[in-house]
Image (cartoon, rainbow, N blue to C red; front, side, top):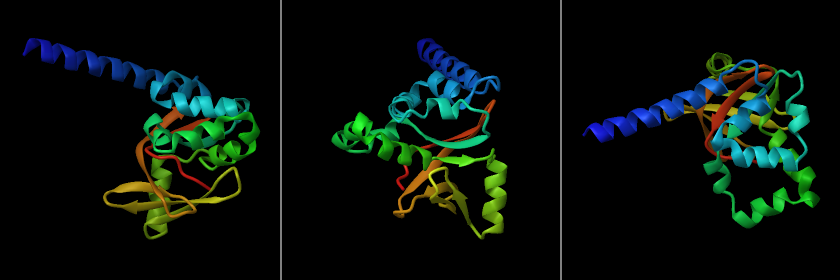
Length: 172
């Protein structure tokens, strides 16, 4: 029993340390993404799309960041194809669909949802619209194709904006 408690304590300590470092306001959005293991696919994609420099800029930006499991739901051949240099423009369009200009906190999203009767449109950097939707006791992003991604964690603050962690990749 003591071993189980020790293991649970160690896991909690590691997780809280990683979360604490991700909340360091001196870190840019890219720095935060690099510091979180569950964003390794996102970081690889940002590098392939040549967007690292842009997301290290002043901003502010709001990034809806998919975790590795979200990217894993994409067919591996499709994902590998998107990461290829010849598809840099298409990958960039997908990634900038996850970014909104300005710093939009969870409270801002909640206010917009209340004002919009459970829906709020967000203009993304690629020029298209994502829709935040309140449903099933959570907040989801609905992409242009009607697919949903749950917002799993909100308000991971960075020096140049905020990250909201989502469970799936949304597609323009």
